[in-house]
Image (tube, helix red, strand yellow):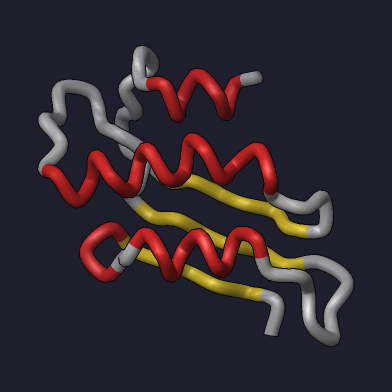
Length: 88
């Protein structure tokens, strides 16, 4: 299957990193949906979320073109480093 979906509460940074960098298997493209992983406006991240955001910021530039990553957020913090990197 070429689809993976993660919600913030069930995310372990090492699991997401492995998914983001994995090659497609028996499919042409992969879709990874990351729900509520981007920092929300006014949110104070705990240590786990900080680690997740740092890992995503470093890893997102290495994602293969065959992998489509979708981030969902209600009101993302536009000043967050990951948000800015995704805008590039």
